[in-house]
Length: 159
Length: 287
Image 1 (cartoon, rainbow over the protein chains, first blue to last red):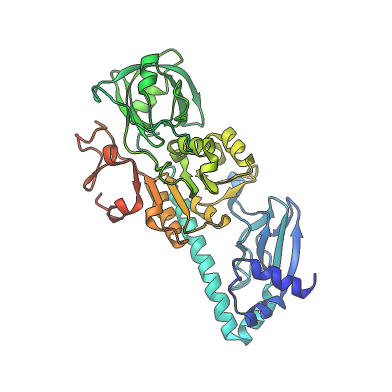
Image 2 (image 1 turned 180 degrees about the vertical axis):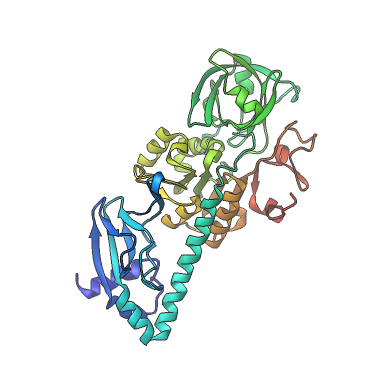
């Protein structure tokens, strides 16, 4: 894919649609267009986290092996969302498996490449941390709500 | 012209007096949720005019009453449908009834969803768990009068795939070219290919016209609290967000005070409120 086309496509993704041009250019230098088929693993628990993904189409499930409970799907990431932040946080290892549950088209961003650029350009680094902090905050809120089991609390006698 | 014929609340001679009604069917939707089909007699059918969002008091003689939202179409009055969570004495007793048995019924009561006031708007329905039941009459109404509305979104969250209500209808609605349906569950397994996550997260998959969208939300209060936050963050005005609340309704006519919510009675002033009507009470821990 031509870099111009990649820039246009990247610009459409909500995670970076309002990113300054200079930062988008930096990001572009570490980006590639990728596809996964249904049931393909994007990464597995324990592997080195070298990338993150901006999902364009399709859906990816995060899985955790819960010994006697078997494989548990804890979350799905869909179009317009971001998959993976372990590339940014030491020790840069995935904590879950990520499996495509539909055919997926995404941008893969090289984490090592970006970490180097974050170190070199702190403005860029700060921008990345701000955006990923927002993702983390949203995920934490969603996880807490899932843990609350709100539908299990729905105990008043009304249909 | 909007084909809404059921605009008047039933005129009840004595709202505290239950009438007998025959059960025509009882089916289990999930392990703990069942749907009961009631056949009003001819005289009652004429009286059983209701608005989407209203509820009936279903009476198991000798046991007690429970307030249950009507989940059938306002256009089909030959059968009244209620989807019920088996959680207490009355709903457990009711679950044991069979076709041909009789129960008591009072109603309909309460305010309804503002389906006629929002003609011309995009509609975003957000339901959690059994909260889809009180919203189903709205969906029927929107589909019946589809040309009167802009975009229609149905976002639905449940605990697990096995807890999803009305699966056949959800699939049918999702196949309609002019309705966008998104479903999520809190906990999935490897057989579940759909979304996993909190209901409000589904908002990230749709593009709301913040100036022309009305959202109707029903589910556990915790779910509604965070969903409203997200809707307001997306730019919807509070006046365009409607919620259906629940408390222990007893008399259903605003006399006994069991369902008091600050200065309001859920049974009489609600259960459907616009968010500004109740926002100042919504966060109060004491209420």
